[in-house]
Image (cartoon, rainbow, N blue to C red; front, top):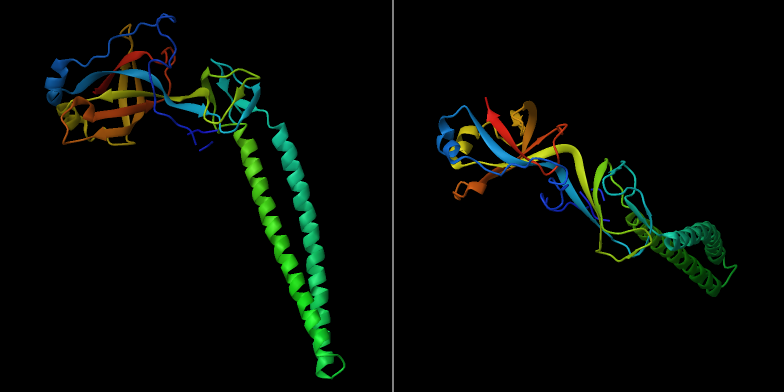
Length: 299
């Protein structure tokens, strides 16, 4: 399966349509706006209030990499998938049988290798003995040549055995990888936003299996005007810790620390979105994913 290492599989974040329907949950959604007055006076202000969408840190669209029938689903929509747990398991019983057979073949090849090496050693000793006998005129040249041919043949058998061992080991590694791809799992817990398939359905490589959200951290994408960016440029350095406030719909203010990620700057482009960045922080209890909130930067 494809993902964010592990498994490689991160897709561009799509905010609104993949989030929980806010109206159905009773959330109050404010319009996304940045006051023009603030934009004009930002360079002289001690703080600025911006609006953004409260979102999971990342979204992962999981696609099938092997064909087969879905045998098990370990987490449904709205549940958290524990770390190291496969989201879905595509039936790999046939692959497991092939893997077992290949390992048996490999074991037999290693046993054969021991015998071939032992035989090669014996033939070499016999060849050396024939050479000494020939020096003293006790045997004919033809016998020595025949023994040399046997040594070469034994060498070729060892080489062929090593080739078959390497091929079998590659086949085993490929089979293990196919089985691994039939059970996509991740190093951290992820929230199941949507499952595209149900149990016992058949899938082919490339089909969507699930959409997972990393809700271990929250993220808000904010945009600035050129004047605001110049004022906050030092404070908005990538990965730098930043202190800010979240203004809730009921005007309650929560102060929190976070850091700046994916700062996008294009000095040659005067469009507003040339000065956007992601503000990453710990999730805030009571906020809904997809909710539009206001953030105060500065004092």
